[in-house]
Figure 1 (cartoon, one colour):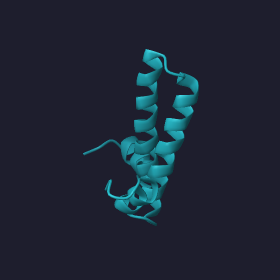
Figure 2 (cartoon, helix red, strand yellow):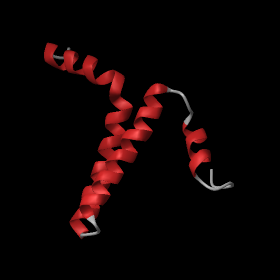
Figure 3 (cartoon, one colour):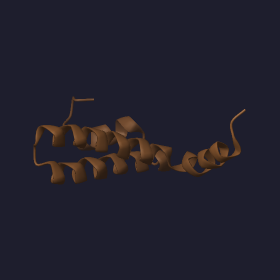
Length: 78
C-alpha cells in the first residue's frame, strides 16, 4: 500500500501526465545536446516547448498521435 503523500501526489500529477512526460523527454534530449554544446540554451527551450505541446495534445485527446504526425510531417512519412 502506497503512503498517503504518494497517493495525493499521483492525483495531482495524473491529469497532466502527458505534458510532464513530453516536457521531460524534450528537456532530457536538450540537456544531452547541451552537454555536447549545440546552441544549448535555445535548443532546451525549443525541445521543452515542443514536448509540452505534444503532451498537452495527448492530455486533451483532441487529436490522435498519428493525426499530429500527419499534420506536421510530409506525406508518406507516417
